[in-house]
Image 1 (cartoon, helix red, strand yellow):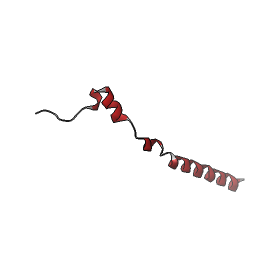
Image 2: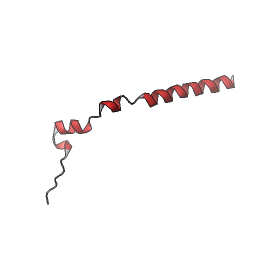
Image 3: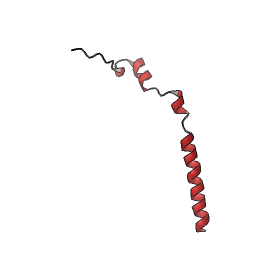
Image 4: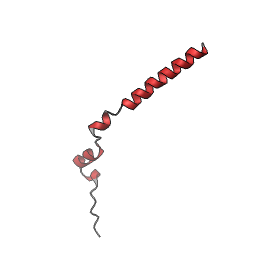
Length: 51
C-alpha cells in the first residue's frame, strides 16, 4: 500500500518552505516586551520598598 504523504525533507525547497515561519510570527515579540517592562518595574518597586 503506497504512502501518499509527501516527506518535506526529501526536497530542499519543500523543506525550507515547511520550516519557514510566517512573517506574522516574527512580529509577535510584543508580549516579551510587555513582560520585560513589567519585570523591570516590579524589580524597581521591590528595590524601592527594601531601601
